[in-house]
Each structure stands twice: as structure tokens, then as C-alpha cells.
Figure: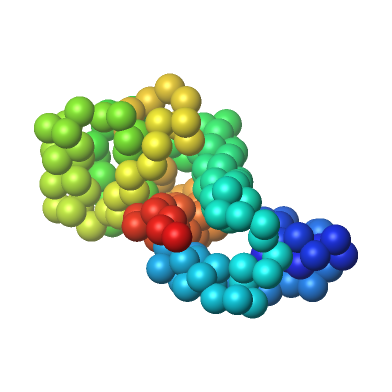
Length: 161
């Protein structure tokens, strides 16, 4: 987060905006506590601005996840969609939020059996496939995991004001 010279708080995912920066734990509860107190609220006119900031953070994280999944595709570190029978420990399984619950359970069971990590994300972060398996050989797998965990933590409880 950055406090801009205009005294507005903005999300700076790329760490390039001018202004005084602050770190905020990527948990829905931390976000709620930060903006319930007077110090956090003084830079917002109403709850709608806080919700806009929250949605902006989720959209930015979703865009980053989508870009990384596209990079995975172009660099061929991707197993074909639905190939959950060849999972290995260290692989990442990204599941589209619109997937049928029965299929989701099968994917989670296969990932747990193999020691892979599973992340459920909304469909707008993944364009075509219901399931994407990222090989552990992808050079930016750590960064992708970080974005997936951040999204999962921030969106798990939602924003309650």
C-alpha cells in the first residue's frame, strides 16, 4: 500500500508508485482491522472506497496469476488440462472456481495423494482450462505459489466492514 501525496491509499503491487509505503498482511482479517481504526479510515470518505481498494488488490493478484499461467504455457512447463494422474510432489494444481464440485474433489484427492499443492481460484484468472498443472521445473514457480497463496489468504474470508 502507498499513501500518495494526495493522501489517498493505493495498492502498489509493482512497488513503483511515489509516496509513503506500508506493508499489510495479506489476510482478510488484517485488512479489516487496518481499516476499522481511525488511522486507516482517515484516508477514505466511505466504505465504498475501501471496497474498491480491496477489489483492486484482488484484480491485480488475479492478473499476476493469469500472466504467470500464460508464461507457464509458453515455456511448456504445463501438463495438459485434466492430467492429474501424473502429478508429482512439488507440482502446483490450479483449479478453476467454476469446476463441478465432484471433479474438484477428485482433483484435490489426487493432489493430496501425490503431495502436490492445490489452489482454487476464480475462473477469470484462468481462461481456458478447468485444471492447470504446473510442473515443478517452472523457474518462477516460487513466485506463482506466492501470488496464489496471497490471493487465497486475502479472498478466503472476504472483506467485512
